Image: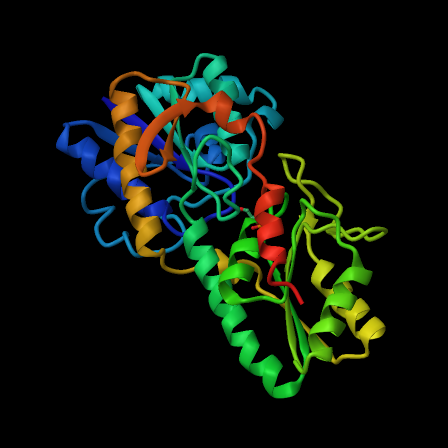
Length: 340
Ligand code: F6P
């Protein structure tokens, strides 16, 4: 068999673990693997590289993706679907494995309906993809964010400051919530629950009235403050997403103004996406890669590999991209126990 693979959307730690696993498993089975460069862009432009044992040697602990990535949407390019089909046909590729989040896999799902033999692998540090308990990349981002919150504690305490830590999370607050719980943040703000700034300030004042001289606020970049637009750049990418940013700054300024406590803002940004994957993400990526190859072998196209409990299973791409997996209210309420 000849298989094509691509990595699309924002990069994340663990992508190389998946690539390595697919290539190792395929070569053991006498299959060939072609890596398309920069996501769907490489398929559209016929840009690829042959992947062999040498190309995947030593990449397991490496962050990012050896194939490169982009936010290219084949459905936003004139004749995009025909170009994808032509590339696969001209290179005699039997099936494609698309590794990505809701956007990359949303395109994969549409291509499947348009007759392309494709299987999906779920990745995103946001952990907001449906039909899988976890995406790889999330655990690494979560641990980085937690470590940053730990570090912010010592400096906030030394200076008697409030520090607002803005973490990633466009539509879902998983990183803010779990890094906030694990790092002992005093308030956590997520996109799913609109921010009530008066309540935030009251919680900080209550905490300081019991003798505490510092506070840490974890906020997801997509958190919504009434009457405030968190968009940094109005131009949308090919999947319709604007660039977010600025909510931490706004909340920090309001906290300082309303409470009188000196406040600083830290935006973690792409630090959360860079660097070496955790053991969890390396193992999950490896298991996903092997399973994705098996799905292709069994011609189970239109499917995505998924983690359910401790098992790797397959689900339909349609179920995975239908809607986002956001933070349930009960989980947020649990976190509220520790606010203030
Ligand atoms: O991949 C998901 C994500 O990291 C989001 O959390 C964030 O909003 C976005 O990507 C940032 O995208 P970019 O890398 O294009 O700045």
